[in-house]
Length: 224
Length: 216
Figure (cartoon, chains in turn green, orange):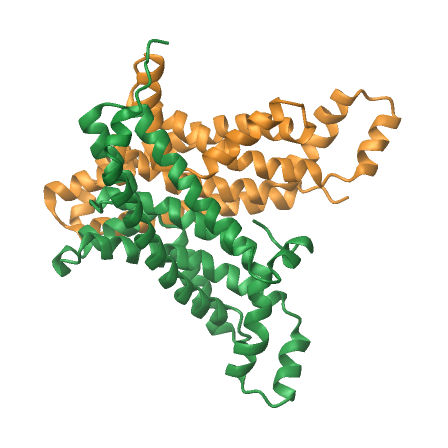
């Protein structure tokens, strides 16, 4: 092995890396928030007892998650080029629509895992359906699905790297730029891998700090 | 079908074939590597298990695109060898998907009932024979749904190979788009094709599972 490691250029470019990291965090946070909204709405629709609603939710889920994320991003970036959306927004939309389908599946299974008696009892005690979801179903479903949700969130963070392809200056993009200037190929990519790993770990373990999350995990209800 | 697609169909189909080829090679390689890693984790071989675990944690925390960059630019520089984008992509996919498959396979191994293993041991099989003829086959059959989930994911992920210059389906479609500029038609066609292909892979998984699952 004749390769000599030189980490100095990485440190010298720390500001670019930090900049990219912040962009990755912003991209993931926005994508995540939108994916959650989409997921909760579609997942709740998918858990309904009306056949039409269930089928339309399933159509969304299957349609979105069976298309590569890269194609999602190209759709917003190149397909709808006439809208002139900034690349950052294209990446957020792509990530949200794609990951939203996964979140929806998880939300649906979470709602399904809450015993039906809870729903009936909530209605019987005079709560409106909306209140029943807000105070009875969602809190319980959330705790059941937290581990799987953590899995999807960490996937979303890693998937955000594809935004570099449509010129969003996030972590991977900056790494490619630094690599082009310094030729410290191996060091750069290992460094950003570790940063992604750190982000993913924070999300995964952070979510498990939610009170009650560990119970769901202990009961073996998770599939993450 | 729109004229843009029809005119460029041979080119697009060649790309699709390349995608399928990449996916197939990576599925075979990834499953083999995943099986080895999963069994090592399951057997808790000291030191080796820790190394495998570190590998799995590292790969599962890294985006596929970065894994591909490491395989295409990083490793060849580190170990001083030359590679084509195609084989770098295959290597990246194998290394990437194996980390996920290993975890699924380990879960499958752990859920084989102790009674089955004890019965095999009681019949005089050696520990290796039990693993080879009892635990691994049962585990593999029972994790078919999880494996096929990963295969579908991998098939979608082959699109990322276009970033390192492998003109698979997505890459060739974007090339066509660069020439004729009909983005909505072309991206729509690409999306639909992936959708159909992924649904097909999923249903193969369901069929296999229905036929092969071991009910103990």
